[in-house]
Image: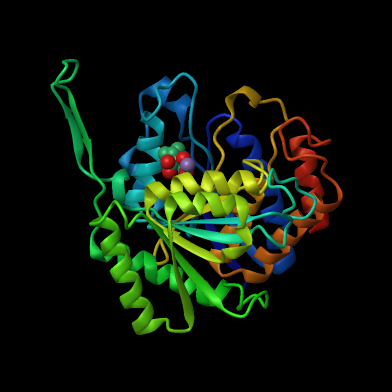
Length: 360
Ligand code: IPM
Ligand code: MN
């Protein structure tokens, strides 16, 4: 009997539905070709539902989502809803409640894609950021007191415990061992670089650095260890991205450097990410937002969503299918599409989905 995966689909806001539709199209072709089934169930979550009913993410939905093999997300963010409500109430809540403690973000420049980096091609921009996704400033305690007075105080703390740091680092070491440059036949060693700020954040990144060295020495002596300050990392991501293999970092730093990484790989039209709980339910998404101004026009680029689908297949264990979807995307970027920008692709959203499906 063909293996069946239960996928929860959350199109979300804005152009989310349009890109997810193309992702589903390609995923279904992959399923047929590689002999598995995808049972997709759609959930209406997002700004429109919130504005209509006041509901953001009912507890019953969170519990239902725990029963799926994976979650396929479009985009969260609505122009008529105050910033923070949907992001915290849906995206971050799912990450935290489903304990998706890894945010995996490949920074890979595909053939045919323009990078703003001078003289850099696909052979230079090809690394992965493992962003810690369950702690740090995102979940640290804080608050405001004496609001509106001259004495107003605002605090938001960067909080990490050893458990969170260690499980993230172990995932990153394992990832470097399996997918690093040596594992891919592209270099002589697999390297994991820790991105921190040990010269200023001397408590939190001391914990990260000590754990990094202890765990690396004890269990991953085959993986080379590097350390970079986060500010310098931004510089090298622009100047010498070919240095990097797998990078691991905290939640906030990871958020920031992966937007920089995304633009070096051609922008939000192509950048995808996975919110991964290796022992539970993971969630895959294009990392760009809901792009409200393009909603319903059929001009948004669905490739990031399709790449997110490929990452989902990989995490489900459908490695061949995952690779085939990525290869199909590469064929389309390399031979068809003019630009990744919305409205400038030379094709409509659904035509790009068709091109990838045909290539597959
Ligand atoms: C991302 C986004 C989110 C984050 C926002 C929308 C809460 O920027 O996935 O990178 O900060 O993590
Ligand atoms: Mn971000």
